[in-house]
Length: 343
Ligand code: Q46
Ligand code: ZN
Image 1 (spheres, rainbow, N blue to C red):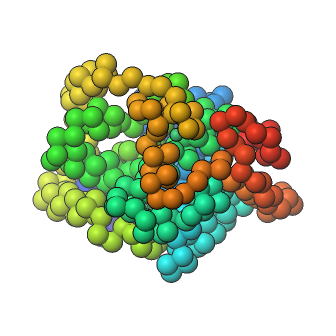
Image 2 (cartoon, rainbow, N blue to C red; image 1 turned 135 degrees about the vertical axis):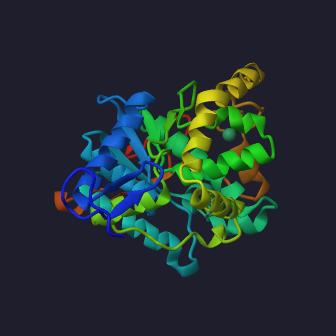
């Protein structure tokens, strides 16, 4: 590449065309942390005294997010949702990467098993459902993340969505004029009854940038895609956006930033009064219907929600071992060994 770092005499390891910025490894790692903090501060995502739960999948984005938030001094714990996908050992291997990072950071990792929480793992649920795998899996993951964060007493839930994810979702929502989704597409969704605040501190970084951050910090992550993601429309849209980016550097960032600056609020204002929340008659979580989408979906595929099955993994360096905890994070708050830490 032959670029020099813009901030010191070293050789650059990355040139970010959209920022016209070349940086060496040391300066890049610092720049990345500063940019993360900038996004957090500008959007008022997270305060220093708040507990943040980072949803980690074992991939580069979420693991880098947990790492950088810890580096920045935030009280960050991890949540790994075990989907039970056995193809290529996908779930087991991604869980191992999440546990490795917990060891490295010396922070606890909470592991929720889908099969032990609803009676069946994702592949079985998908086989019994007429929805697309990602639609069903996404619904289940969002429910678990929110429920665990609420019952665990976390102030904020952070996910590793990056600019490529956000721009592709935006493009899809615009192509189909999904005004309800457009109203809610934001790097921050504020808390309201039964919903924890959700933040996406990486919304300005490309996939390439988060991957480099992981690499430079020795964060091992699963490189394989989820076996269900092969024909996902999102991958196709990401390809189109990358072609645009190639021809017109900065397009992705402008597309998403200008949506946030000029359009999102209009959709939000238009949609806001239409949604009235109440408690799900089965699980008590907030919903616009009588029974929430999660309970309806689980019932339809023959599952039974028995409460979140959580294992708390303690980092090895602390000399502690993981403890298994059975279910019981129900709406009624049934007693269980983990409740004090989960709360
Ligand atoms: S895990 Fe689940 Fe993703 Fe796999 S099935 Fe789709 S939604 S692709 S992020
Ligand atoms: Zn419900």
